Amino acid sequence: MRNCAIYSSQFDLDQLFAVLQSIYPQGQIERQDDKTHIQVTQKKWFNKTTKGFNMMTSQTHPEEFGKMIQGMLGFVSQIEGRNPSLQEKVLIKCSTLNMVIGIETEEDISEEFFQELLRLADSLDAVIFWGGGSLLNAQGQLLLDVNGESEVEDYAVTAHTSFLDGTRTQSESAFQRKDRSEQKLTEQGVPFNVHLPARAGDEDTTMRKEDEIARRAVALCIAALKGECLGAGESAEDTAALVQEVIEKYEASAFFSPREKRFIEQHGADQQEVISFSWGYEAYHVMLWALGYVKELGSPTELCNVGQAVGYLQQKDSFADFLSGASLRSTSEILDEADLIYRYNWVCVDSRVNDRMPPAGLNGGVAYERHRALNWLICYLDQDWDDVRTDT
Image (cartoon, rainbow, N blue to C red; front, side, top):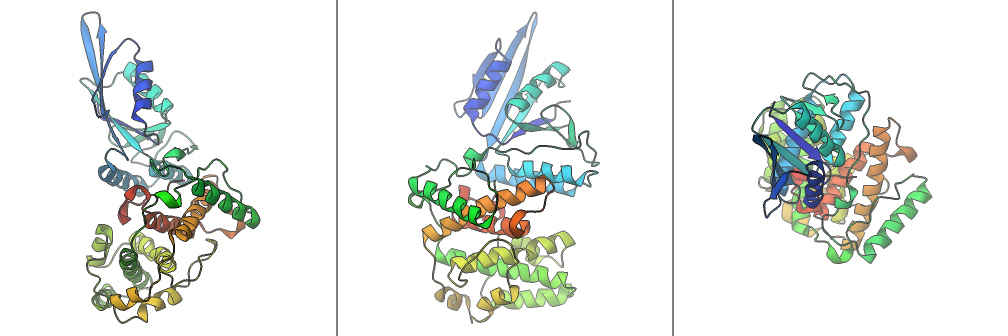
């Protein structure tokens, strides 16, 4: 079998090179200048073998890598797993990935080479995509295949947290913000992970512009409106007519992300899409807060008041009117909420992974949507809306 790739939460290509050197101490190892391809040549008596390792990371190929991870998440989520809890943990692991290593070999992967790959996977805390659709853990055990089967009952999810803000420097303001967030969590009785790093500071953050945020708010509201209508049993025809009316009122046809555009333009939608886009009201609520329409976000414990949130837009006659009524919050205010929701969401993810109810009444869905929205606002990893990650 030759079809094999290793997926890791790590992204350090120099670390990968050092691991391969330890696995092949007698091999001839060559690396391209950009570090994204390594070739290992081993001489054995009268022949030699060549193995290639092609790397792509969220830093070297951010757009391509993001699309690949989204596709992987879609593939895993569609499997009807026999162990839903395990499958959810696999999905969480997939969402933390930062590097893929494609394996090149002239022959089928031998048992000896497979053991070498397991050493590599173990060193990188990786999962292995094997054959026609099987995911293995670093010990070579089946986590999940296309039939929903697995060989393990549980899986411990870990991620590389030092990449959370890319190469940004963790400034003094970032450390002070981390302290304030942890103090607030302590006051609320919310357990938190002291090892989570500080995030970006005021000095090194590029924020979204006011008009860009307003367009995103309108797009989120309209997509959520379609999801809400279909979820309530409205016909696809009536829903499409209403959505089109709102699009025309706010001249919003160019505001949608590619994924939103497909959802808006298709006839009806499947149940999963309806649910997913309906949750967009929570992200829309964050945009309203950033634009000054909503006074405060508060803890992510309750769903937003949809009627009130939509009312801020309904009361405006046009997009220009909506934009003119906005008052963008300061960078510091938005970073405060971004840091805090990062820690809230870690608590919710940790609770889900360990099959516990989130403490202090936290709502995991609300925390996730806010985390995504705030990461977009602070240009986390400079990702477009469809690709925004919520690493914890």
